[in-house]
Image (tube, rainbow, N blue to C red; front, side, top):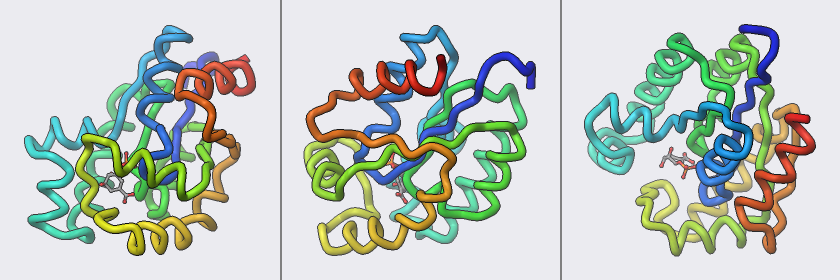
Length: 172
Ligand code: S3P
């Protein structure tokens, strides 16, 4: 770590806007960013949905952890967005902390996330129906809660608004 640039990892449920907020933050602050899902897809040569559908969630989690390890041990970027389940694995949380990242939970209501899931082009096999998605959302709150920062995403906020507020509060 160079001791100067803060490292921030964005966590939170599917559809809360981690990837978009990271993209805006990166361009506002002129800092490099990475998105773990994109990184996995590039490295594995298949989409996350393909991996989940063909190999199941336990194998996907192993692939996810291996890719997180590879990503962090290359040049750790200052802004990192994760998949919604990455932070739920203890090994992943520890790796992130060991690499000097400040964790920020993008917190919102289930309905807000669900609306984004429904209208997104991204396939999310773990949120195929609302009942299953609500269950996951509820199960994960206690783990997301472990993040250092809790950043409320208001439903009337665009991802640009959220990034601007985050830039002021966390990076200033
Ligand atoms: C997942 C979230 C997805 C992706 C995968 C599993 C999860 O990322 O990693 O479908 O377990 O919550 P997003 O949070 O970007 O949708």
